Image (cartoon, rainbow, N blue to C red; front, side, top):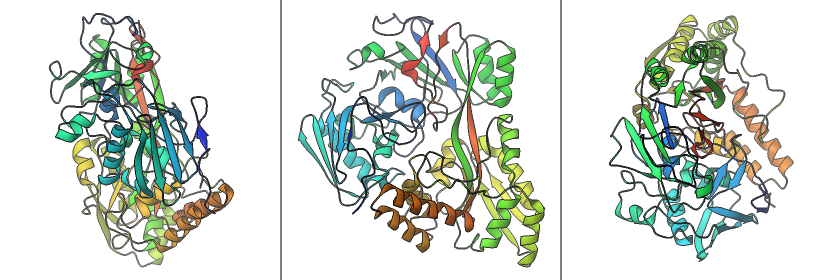
Length: 509
């Protein structure tokens, strides 16, 4: 019998395991405080500056939760640990495990005044199922989505899907008003059920997004700031200067500017945002030789990446998964930095001529340059391309780049990791490489009768990935915030999400 992957019933007081979450922002001065919101600061306005601009309001294909979390919500939410699922637009759910039923929160409206109901949920989940994205594979086992009545949605699976609930708690399953889905305007005109409405008139394309309180929000008493304004500033020093001059209340910082912010008397926070690693995507050709892969792994020094990019704030890890996730192998040591061992491996196979282009987004250029130097030490020629953040995410999986350094697919657990990177049609497998041994292990995990049997199978997958050196170079990507405690407090981030904090929980003074 297939195992039941999650508790059969989750209510407002219960939990389940999942992944990733939200971001934060700021707005214009002089707004009249709303009695139901936190008053203070610039008239109840939270002003935030980050280093990511908004391309559009599509939550499926772009990591843009810094903006989308203002206006959209999902059926489920996440605690700050990035792994505990909480109710949101769904108050409870029952998992049998192939028949799932959600009970929807009553009295919720979209920001266009239309009712949030089961029909809207069906439309959004069907879009998630039918739209190519990293979230689509979570819907592979879904055979039917139906509205039982206005407040209940039934989902039928034809096989267990351990990443289904985790994916629903992330930005891929944000609920968008059917009106803007139907007319196709949602990418420019977002309409959700969230605490704030997009204020297009006050926003400036490419530089500032303003969102004002949605006065019919279902949880208005806990909405937080009356207004949120998110300003894009690409330069770290300019971000810090915006805090110093009082133009911003909260700014995204890096390791170096965080130290400057501390010295200037501001409050700073850091959190483990993501786990990064080297992704060798073209294992059919460029990285077909397992010994070459192992040499590359031994030559890498992730501690240097942490020291250079994050001022030493971070950890070198042995494997893709976290200790609290199925598939984590306690005894796994991974690939420690050992250049001599890397050179010996390359020498043992005749020092083949190996060269490739590594693509990273621009913020990771210092890491890419270190990697380039490390590979040169063992005779491997690496060229580096470092486009902007938005350009990177539209190109790195186009099949022209054999490798990248990026965080991917760990947060929702081993099944999502498998589907994303090792399944033949996975989003992180642009070269369509077949991994029959890993396919068989994943199927064994899915068919397991107990959690322990499934965990053992996922551990076998982790061990196989390590033994074949299919991924390595794991290090935690640390997020940093600096803020003025005279104007704002309680800046809480969600582990696993970058350039985001939980706006509703921010306290303006």
